[in-house]
Image 1 (cartoon, rainbow, N blue to C red):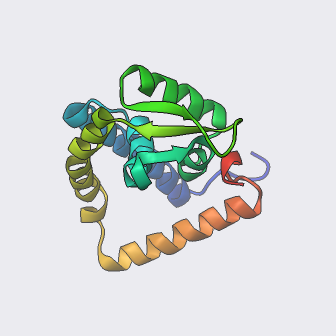
Image 2: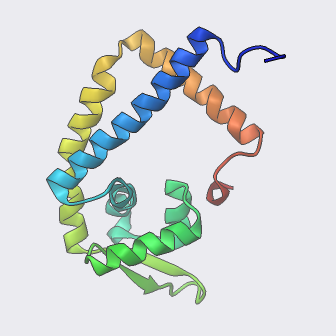
Length: 160
């Protein structure tokens, strides 16, 4: 290549390792959620904020912003979750064009069943592998990366 290799050897190793860790960690978390609660990672991402919301209800737009999903993706996934009895969609009294999502009892039981094993899996594969100094370094690195992405306008559309 005229302008040199894409990445140096050390950079390439770190980049490939990051990609492998990201995929493996997502797979481990998804497997744990399915095994313990019959949930996907996407289900859990939506049920968590609903479980923490007052009365288990959030506006669709607020839920989309919280999980950084676009409205179309959220709408389709909420429809699938409704069919499974995890949530219900309701009209928004304050805005006729808006919609609310309400956590059902089945959804609450599922997220509660998933929380502890999920936390243990996150701890086992992520936090237990890092020392206190490494956590500080990673926090700083992740914050800088996110700031650059936002600065370069690569923030998720729903978070804008």
